[in-house]
Length: 406
Length: 77
Image 1: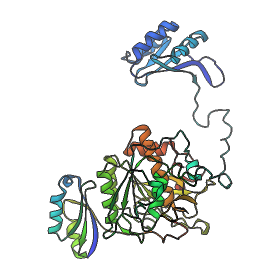
Image 2 (image 1 turned 90 degrees about the vertical axis):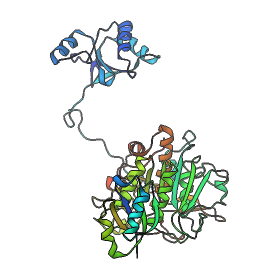
Image 3 (image 1 turned 180 degrees about the horizontal axis):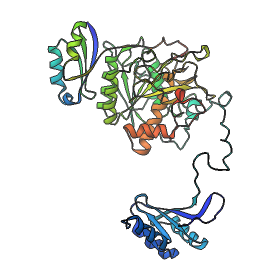
Image 4 (image 1 turned 90 degrees about the horizontal axis):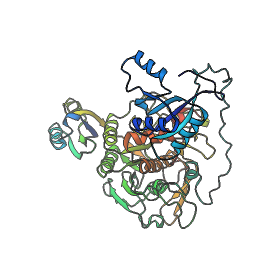
């Protein structure tokens, strides 16, 4: 296949994407509709033979990739494109591009300008919180039906009208206390990850609004808990096949302090069993005063997704912990400033800030991706990281970026 | 007594009840046996920790950390 000239940046040759495992059928179709003689890399047993077959053929099927590389005239390309548009073994036709080593393209003068973080404008929260808006929730977004999200926190207000009619499974791992939330934090986090998109009053504030809620109380009504209680909650969530565990909790760490082997090993087991654990990166920073704190325990474990916080202007939150050593890293960010969500009755709703608020955004979004793609564990982590919106901020602060709903 | 969490090695993770017995004999007052995570939690005298660490069933022993949320009226949570 010799390079010819085509429109700027193209060679004049074409690439045809084939449907899975349909190379033989595709060869027949390409001959029938466009008169193309085809060779396949599956036939070639030696380099020289391949080159000979190649120069004789109009079309070379790259067997392992289900892609055909060909040269063809305009009429043939039209015929192939029509065939690709209908059912059959051809999926897509595109012009072959010229590709350069980075920096070698003479036209590539400068890298495009990096968009600045937008200046904060007061968000319009008449129908939906700014957090739901920036993670891309709209009427077409899945609602997490069939997903099981465990929120390990201070429990849930079972009397809250915004959760009426929802399937809620509860357990308390705080001795002497029921799952009924006497603090508020748990209710707020469950609201963000699993609450309603259209509550009776106020804006929609929940992401996986049809998920099954697993409310695990691992922090007492005074807000305190131990590793033991948290591990029990984690075990319960894994045993119940929860797709995602959201942990808006943590203990501060010192720079360079090793992460917990116990939590890391537990998280790896959880991942193998299909449970993704998402945890708050921590609120110990005071960036305006010049300090960035390391990621808290247990979010600093490699197998736990650490979530930092951004505000409605797209800036990193002042308190958001960062990647300051090689131990704990921020993996993604979520909306974490001035977040409206549920609060125990009679107050019903409250605004809070924290990586505690960013975390359930990520957990809810994870549940939606799990539902959308049927993926769990590491594949689900990959989906979140891959689809996150890249931000013009250091990856030490935002990881792969702002989580985005399917 | 110190609250600890023990992570059990892969090799022994299939029979956590037996591991818990072994840990009891080494001085652990067992609190929870968590099959899903291959973790056993409990209380133990500080001096007995090295003994537990040396067991072939044990991958890691850690003192449990405390977690604390700020009060409900705090600015940042």
